[in-house]
Image (cartoon, rainbow, N blue to C red):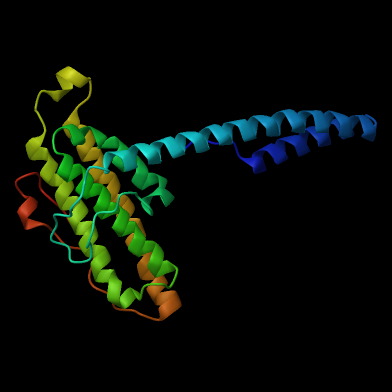
Length: 229
């Protein structure tokens, strides 16, 4: 997300003050000018941040609206016992939100797969947050964390078979390319989260051996050649 940075603003203002003072302008005049510039600049920052917050809230409302009709879970993951009516955890990760938004078009073709992906990712990030917050024991939940990652990737790959080939002609974008991009983004981002948890286990818990998180999917060979991720 694009945003203004307060530190950059302070740096610019300090630089202006330095330039003005260096030219032997009276300190009082320098302060007045800086106050005027600061008021204008920080007002713009607040307006922009408020707009971003509003947009973020609208995105979350849209995703929550998408899953309202889903009443029951239909998955092979024992960890997920019910289908939540609101996303609670992935909202804390902009990358995951972007992935959901990018594949939102699949809702039209398979509502169940789309909502499954949302539910899997929300629970996936819940475990990540709870482990780092020391609410979940990493020895007990790291395997479940990997299993949910597995579920997300398998479900996303399974979407290929239900997408119309000529969708690009009607909507102006390639559904297959967007889906592939989202899968790649999730694989790469989730790999970073795994690395963080592995480092956490070593540095905070003195745990040096966790389940191997690098493996291959034989059942996905029909879609593409799949390497270790």
